[in-house]
Structures are given as C-alpha cells and as structure tokens.
Length: 324
Image (cartoon, rainbow, N blue to C red; front, side):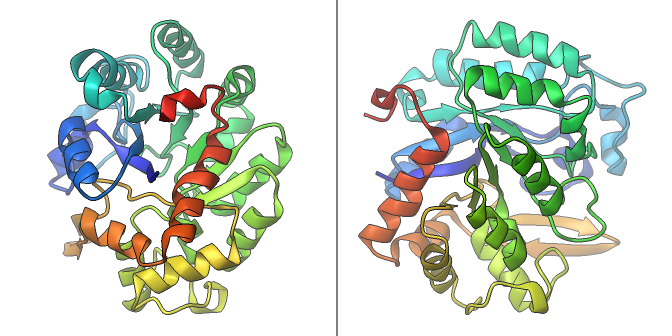
C-alpha cells in the first residue's frame, strides 16, 4: 500500500487572486491521477488561506483580518466543505481519503474549537494540519491562543501535520519552534513537512524525539531549490548530505538515515509552484509522476516503510479497517 500523506483539496482565493499557481485541486482529479500512478490512500486537507481573512486584500498578497471577511471563524467553511466533498458528494473515491482539518493557531480559536467539535459529531477526521506561514500566524501561538488545539489533539488522539521552514524571514513556522512544542508535549504526535527543508540538525532532532516524524512533500522542487542554491532550503553547512541532482537518491538516503521517521507525501498540487516574487517570476515545476517515480525507484521495502508503515505509526489509526 502507498499512502500519500500530504495533499490539498479545494481552492485558495489568495493564490488565485494574487495570480499564483497552484490555486485549486478537485478531489476526483487527484484521486484518478494518483490511482493511475499506484497511490492507494491520501491524507487530505483544505488549501491554505481561509475566509476569515480579508479577501479584498488578497490581490495585493496582503494578510489582514480587520474587514473584508466572508466568514468569522477560520477554516469553518473550508473544513466542512472538504468533509462534504469526501463523505457526501464523492463517497466512492472518498473511501480512500484520510481527511485532516486545518486550523489557525492565532485567530478566534475558541470559535474554531466549537466548530470542530460540531464537525467531529458529523464526520470522521484523522488529524490536524497547519500552514502558518501563508496566513502569518506564528506556530508558537500553540502555547497560548492555540493551546486549545493541543488539548483537542490529546482528547481525540489526533496527530499534527505542520508546514515547516528554516529561512530567517519566515518567523511563523520555524522547524525549531515546532520541535520545541513537540518536545514539550510528548503525549502528542507531530509531523514536520518538507523534509525540514533538508536541515540536518532539525532532521536529527526529529529522529531523536519519540513523537515526531517528517514528510518530503514537494520533494522534487525542493531538490531543484538546493541545486539552484535558493534560500528556502537549508544552507550547505547545515544541509543533509546527498546528491540533490537526483531526487530518488535523496529519498533513498533520507530513508536510510531516518528509517522510522520518514513519511512520503507529494504535496499535491504544490509539487509545482509558480508566482511573481519581488517583481520576478519564480517557476518550480514538477509532476505527480515525477514524485512517485522518485519514490518507487528505491524498491519495495523502502516504499512500504516510508509510504505505509511509518505513516500508519504517525496516524495511529484506531480502526485499521479504514485502510482495507
């Protein structure tokens, strides 16, 4: 079995209005393309921006929440829309999905808790996802306003999957901050996305902590970023040592170095990214097939370990029949 542990379904008004790519993915399109490539199950969650932000500021790529909101509660619409798509609109394909809810650790967290409890009474979901960089909500708010999500995760025995970063300008999702929170909450499970940007000290710390994992979402374009010495990946003196011109080699070396902590994920549709940044168009383009090919090149034992066994350990599903 191959479980893709990192996928977005739905639409993102911020990316669409600002002119960035990608900005949407349909559940059925993801399922059909991935199934043709050999994927059996998908962890899925909504896109990144939410309707409790000022959507009138999105075209200027600004994050505001004083006015222009279409909803008062972050991700209340997006989470319910995802569950309806999985369980009500497309239940046949939906059987292959393991939905996570998105949360904002800074804004109106008490109302988010109320909505999540209501949603939990109607639909089954298996984890909590955060992408705090785009919405500019520091992950450290999990110690304060967002502590309610730690409490819900403990109550429901759900894991966290958290976008991670190492670039200095991203103060919202630093690997070190996420790992500090994980270390302070050993009763909870955490997965750091994007291979911790290949930052070896962070990967080593994931390996040392009993309650943390990492995924390699958007792997091929992250390898391209290393080759091009782009700033969103670890600098050479901190970088995991491997051949980044060969994404399959990188996966194999990470799987060997961190045999029980590596979970494979594509980040569909964000295995490609194109946007205008500081008046320059940045294009990092891959395909679902390239992501899967880089995985399967490592052989069946490795594939089963990083795309099945480790992911099941992270999920700790009470009902394994969900995957049957």
